[in-house]
Image 1 (tube, rainbow, N blue to C red):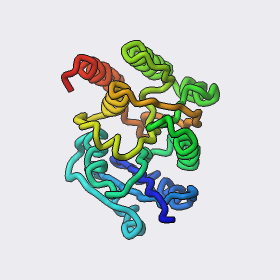
Image 2 (tube, rainbow, N blue to C red; image 1 turned 45 degrees about the horizontal axis):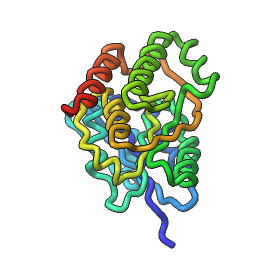
Image 3 (tube, one colour; image 1 turned 60 degrees about the vertical axis):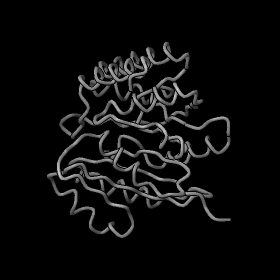
Length: 240
């Protein structure tokens, strides 16, 4: 029986320090029943990211923006270039805040429960992951993400614990049907809101989380939470 295809998408901007390690760990993955497709979108990097990628170019699908357009734009570029037979798609950030080895847990969940078309890796189920975020001085971001998730649950009568997680494993045909439009980090909210609005059942599994500091290259800012909220409202009102 031919293997199904799992597409792993990596959007990145100036991630020379970590992208090599990310790819090595992804190549080491073995997920029963799946062939892994890796799509890397370089969103206008100005550091040595592309040099680091050279040894891997024959093993990945490499796409490039000539200037920095934002995470949402990078993801939309990748989603438009998924393998025609792709069964599942997940995003792996290039900064190693999320552990690639845990992707198999999400795949096992979606394969084992056919009721679900999407599985999220939640940073808020594990107490250890929550404490790590607070210890790094991200209490305000934790609060912002909690508020966005709570408002999302209120609008859609859902019970999510982490609407903004990067680890969203989604059946590829469903993902392609969402007509995503966001350019920045607000695409995380757009994906969640459109899935819920379509009636999609989303499962959650606990994952670890290793937040980095802004000095280390963290890019999301408080204003991105506001953009996420606006995106949510626009979708609820049926204008996006």
